[in-house]
Image (cartoon, rainbow, N blue to C red; front, side, top):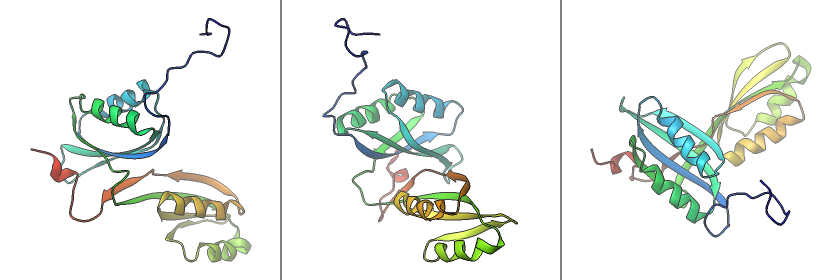
Length: 187
């Protein structure tokens, strides 16, 4: 839709101060069909792009834990967080961005490496938290864990050899110390 003055097309503004930054949200939800769709639809309807999303079981079979990484300003993220509570199967939401957390992801990286280059690739991998998950004639699969920055650095180093395939889990976070998002839920 064009603006009446013939200017740029109208876009919906996200409320807030405009200083967008990465936010990490942890949501505890009932383990039911459709919950993931309702949560992601809420962010889509508010023009958020989800950078990463990880959904996993907890030690309770009826409960799942979502780790959602989004970019937005503080006001808009706070508003979206409050609106998540309106979804019937959302039990707890916490923005852990400013909290001390362990923030890790896992990556599987298939690197092109024939027998002649394999030693060179392995030398580059030294000092990184990696496992060799698979060896083939012309490639190897590296399993790496660490922060987003650590994974980014490793990918940069391996790009020179040629990356045939790459998959990343996205962030999973846990609060440091004795606090627990799950313990905060009133059963």
